[in-house]
Length: 250
Image 1 (tube, rainbow, N blue to C red):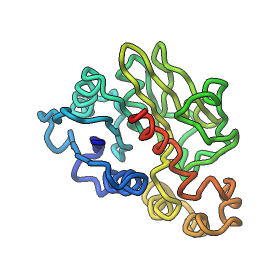
Image 2: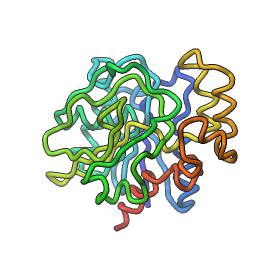
Image 3: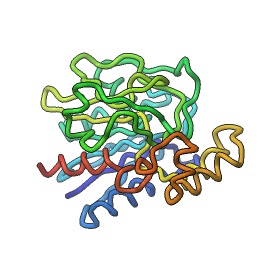
């Protein structure tokens, strides 16, 4: 299997979402071949999609939304992927990108930032039956860090999960030969990595960061953060990524 990871971060940002996704994907299946595209590094380059089985759009640390003129290089790659009808997975900014490209709308969340964990996520009826969220139960929590959100789903998209902060936490768009699955949260980010991220996005207390550092192995720390201990265990945390990879060979 061959996966293309589209890096949604400009080269000048010290964010290595590609490495994070690469490690998770190869932990799930070491045989997967991974290629990488960075639209912001070479705005005129469109990746070769020959033989690509699926495409991952990463999150992003930029201070603009996917509808901004500065996101044009990223949108150009997305258009090529969607025109080629390659199955795609979007994480955070990547989910917003998919929503916008298919005719939805995005914007800054009126509830402010949602950093650390997306808590108390509930499945819709469609989400309970959808293979993307197989293994998830109502009230789950997942690492997240975001400012923007999907404010209107594209016509034909199916809402799979949401919470009080962001009503669209997961959706699927499956029509006209296109299959796009996206989440607002970050299953690829471990609690320990989140502890390193938080000081860069807000004034978060050391005690919170310490709880994240312990949460994967300390059930009490996980509960302190508002998660069931199992939610932050690696096998459970990466549920959506694993389910998407399985769908590519189904």
